[in-house]
Amino acid sequence: MTPEHCSFDREYCSAPGWLPAGKTRRGPGSWLQPKDWDLHVTDLEQMAESVGFRDLRERVLGLAHLRSTDRVLDVGAGTGLLALAAAPHAASVHALDVSPAMCSHLAGKFHQSGISNARVLLGNATDIPLADGAVDVVISNYCFHHLPDGEKGRALAQVMRVLRPGGRLVFADMMFRIAGASRRDLALSARFAGQMIRHGPAGVVRLLKNVIRVLFGCGDQPADVDWWRETLVREGFVDVSVASLAHEGGIACARKPASPA
Image 1 (cartoon, one colour):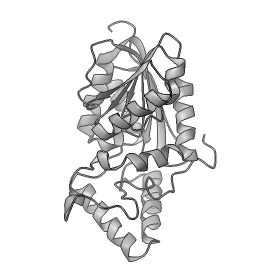
Image 2 (cartoon, rainbow, N blue to C red):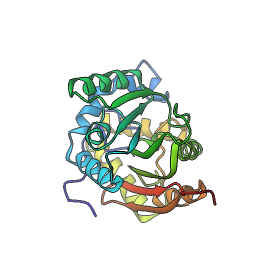
Image 3 (cartoon, one colour):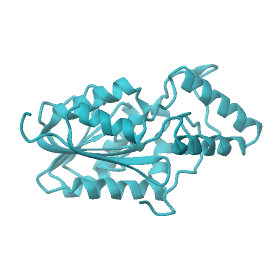
């Protein structure tokens, strides 16, 4: 389903909870704290330039089938991978992110690009600061795996709330279980561990820290394809389609019912 070049082997995005080489956190033991996204604007800009993320952008927007009348919400917009590309094809774009630094950076990019139909929203995916039925399309890329499963469900409930009846949801995300039992889960976890171990003792230390972060519930918490399919249906979405890709990711499409069941 995906080109051979669509892979995420670069250090800053290749493994759950990965800390880019040379980066430091906020102090001793702070690697057990939630990631401070204000410190990672440059990292996300680098990711947005990767072949893999450009491919995901095209896949998500292609499946979204944006129209000139669509009001769009990008959940976890980061530095604007999706929002910047969506704006020329939509009536309006809301770019939601939890990081003030990301929001400020993206607002500057909108201004520099002459994009007048997009604005940033500071907020969380589990409490979207928009009115009911405010948007026609919700898009997202590599956001939901930062949330525990319960918060993923709450985020989907918020997406359902802000979508108009018949509105569309399309998102890409990590879609596997860390230390899961499926063949795909095991292969991906082994690949990520191998990538870090190849960096020598420092990589082994990072691997152990990531394991501890996951055990303490403060690392990335991706869900697999089956979980997403079942949860989207449980939250009331219809026309649900979820597919894994050749790397650790997957893409999901769904629609809010046009009328109450």
